[in-house]
Amino acid sequence: MRRREFITLIGGAVVATPLVAHAQQFGGTRRIGVLTSFDENDPNAKAYLSEFVKGLGELGWTDGRNVRTDVRWAGGSVDRARMYAKELVDLQPDVILAESTPQTAALQRETRTIPIVFVNVSDPVGSGFIAGLSHPGGNLTGLMPYEPSLGGKWLELLTEIAPGVNRVAAMFNPDTAPYAKSYYLPSVETAARLRKAEPIVALVHDDAEIESVMTALGHEPGGGLVTISDSFTFVHRAQIILQATRNNVPAVYWRSDFVRDGGLLSYGPDNLDIFRRSASYVDRILRGARPADLPVQQPTKFVLAVNLKAAKALGLAVPPALLASADEVIE
Image (cartoon, rainbow, N blue to C red; front, side, top):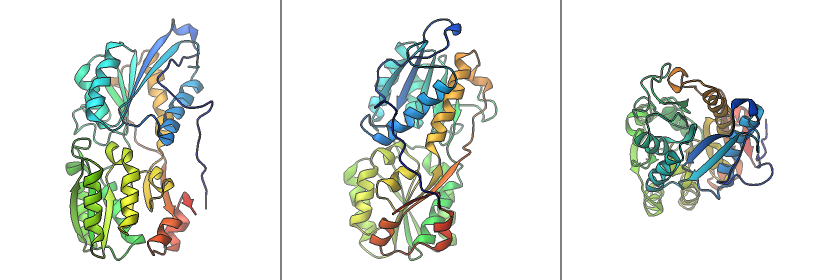
């Protein structure tokens, strides 16, 4: 069983200050914008951005030479995402890294010419960002994290660790995850029917609504939660985990950060790997490639994480087969 340790930032936090690169032969300082849904004080988010910086360094772009990076942290706010998108576009960078769907949508509204590399966008075709995965066709390309079938996989894992679940709420914010209903919910509902569980769509916009959903789920035995891939649920993960614990609701999450922060179970792509790989597309664009010609990449590494302490608090026994297949176990 493999145990993973937290990856910390080398030399401190990544902040919205100049960051520069190494290849003088490319003709002076290049400029990279980064727009993220994360909160700038979130250590996990900083680790992701650090992987992007590390990836750039491995490709020859090192601090102090020929690239400056301007970072904007939207903190889960759609309004801030739009404001910062305009700020970054006004800086006229050579390329912009966009993290999540709201950030990508905000940037697309501001520019159809500056190259944009997105990460953690679930449905780039359905969201109108690209024409197709193999031939994006515009100024955007990037890395998508999930297939729509992952919704069913999350519910399957939840009922494996908590077989008594008979009502399952799929939680997301429709403002930050407008794709969720058409992209993830069909597979969640199909998996729920197969397991004779009632699927519930739980739309949330703030911490109060999260609390209300979780209180209702915990009011009777058999309630469970599937968190949908959504920048809102990531930014508000502390509240979701807290309410799941208080209301004795087993929950499955889409990223291992939730499990490290006290959540029960997660399954999803290795986000550190996604950010590191995104640097290769930024590098190729800085060297002259067009986003229209760069196919959207799929995840290559997935992580199953289990929190044994959380399971014990919920009175759940982790099946041996599930434990044996876990990549990350919190004890």
